[in-house]
Length: 413
Image 1 (cartoon, rainbow, N blue to C red):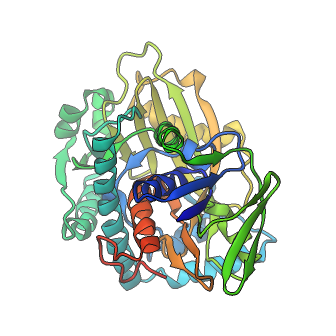
Image 2: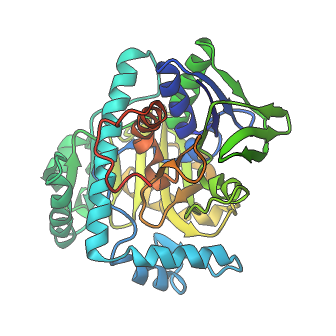
């Protein structure tokens, strides 16, 4: 078939790749001047099934309430005139029960672990340089009490096959000597040796080049202006560079998916949650991180991409605003400098803010709604890079009429 993929982030490009692998003709539409320019550019770069816990947990409502007063909360809720924020927030709160959080976390882990296996198939077939580090991810805790709670919490993922190792502070430093100077501030950590990291934008752009080499078409700088439908299906996508017709269409526009979907009568419970990141050159600093880490007390994630480190933090309910100022990054930068004082050239940090396409239950939207040839692959939230490869394979299987390789109960709309 001829399949039109809407969106050139990591989800859209991996979908185009998997569709092309199945023998389809693929056409991808991207409004920016290059693929992987928005959410896929500035995230933490973690392939992290070990971080599959959903945000919609029993603790979340109090954190959001406190954020109205306290400005250093990892989750921040900003009063807005946007009615969709409140309707989405209500759905989010309905997911914040212990039972639903457990169910959604296990579903998310199922998808994340499968997705990692699909990534491994891709990199076995393709030569792609994306600063991969497969030494695992370290989830740090500042107190013994927090570490004990973290271990208890992680048993849910361990019951689903996640490999974990509990390290005391000496074990943490033995694993990554660059944390030696911060040793007394760390009680220990949970180490997930099968988690990994890599630069998602670098990967996405390299994979997009392979799609083009094999005959696929990627139209950058192309703004989608509408979708025409007739007889229960999509007939064409309208853009400022002409119209595109296909046999099937995939909606993979991340945070912008619900805006376009509304024009054809499809309501998607996706809302943009703003995240912040720093990209910092290592320079001539002698002790950069050797593996990725997450400071669980401050919810700051730190990854090493070759000669750079990427630091991410904060989830702000602020609509489609991507503005930022230096003060927004002061806390996360301070946490990173405390952990890795000789880890990077902090004065040369590049600031970025972008949008995570969040659903209330933190699970992406798959399959068809209303229209027979429009498939959803969107709403991947804060670990879209982790879930993208499996989501792409699932979407290709659905389009082919094949059952996906994993059980889709709870995942398929």
